[in-house]
Image 1 (cartoon, one colour):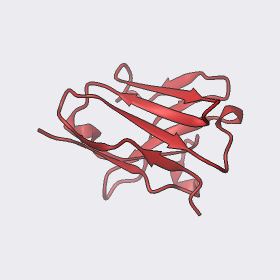
Image 2 (tube, one colour; image 1 turned 180 degrees about the vertical axis):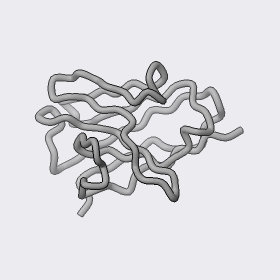
Image 3 (cartoon, one colour; image 1 turned 45 degrees about the horizontal axis):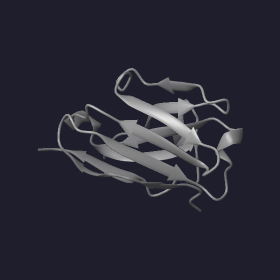
Length: 118
């Protein structure tokens, strides 16, 4: 059963920006550390960014300075603002609880596909 619903993906030109959004009717984001992950076919999901219950963000080195994670506790959403996108950012993006080992997580949503291409 999927607990999370991601949206906002699409085709983006290199150097462009995109904002992804995640919501859930089962999880209250203000009470936990939430994260964004991404996955390329053939590879495992990797952690992109996470934000703590007290709104402290952390980023993977490969997105630091380009991506920004935030939460809206009223709307119960977690967003990922992505700037300066390049082809290596092409992936399906997912949100879930934070974990160093995302393959141990469950209740994944369908994700949202971001394709960076001219």
